[in-house]
Length: 126
Length: 109
Image (cartoon, rainbow over all chains, first blue to last red; front, side, top):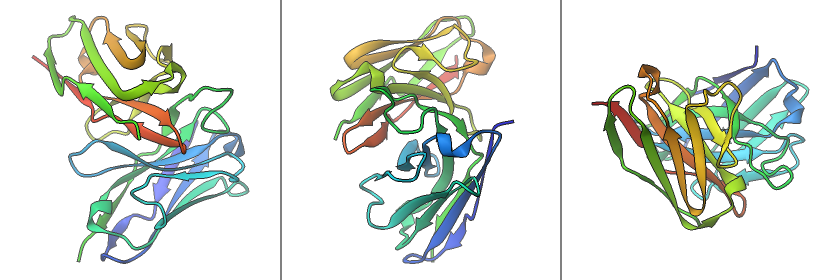
């Protein structure tokens, strides 16, 4: 069964750091790009960051650029999101999601994110 | 940066009715870059449509996507009880970035 399981969420003070993990199983992890998407309480979806299957290309939303770092360990089938300088507006459920291709744009088409984890909650508050 | 505006914000319909959801882009978007998702309360999103009109694996054929340029549509031909949810469009943009629309809630009338 294809599965994504996030962990690492919690309560952190403004300015603090947190590292999220996403353990993948049931598919060839290195063959797919991966993303982090977040959802603030009662709000819509916001894409945060993405990484190609090899890990060689990374992409960020302007709202997190310079503060968050996405990475992956294909030998451990695990995706990470290192979050630094956290702000109250970073409070959200964070989902990891599997893309349907090894890079975001595969032969000129975006295939979307077909597998999602259950999410991990990050709360930034003093 | 391209902004996706979804309308209406809420759609009140009865089971069996047809639902038409709109996603309008602030600039022209390639139809190859447009996806739709469904999200139910307390659940992760589910991919419905990619490439504006291609159904994802396992998605019933009552769901269909269409459109080009700046105007895209998700149509649910006959609403089933399990279709009442929030729907989001998403586009692949320059940089690149992946932008979501604000969502349309389909509720039972």
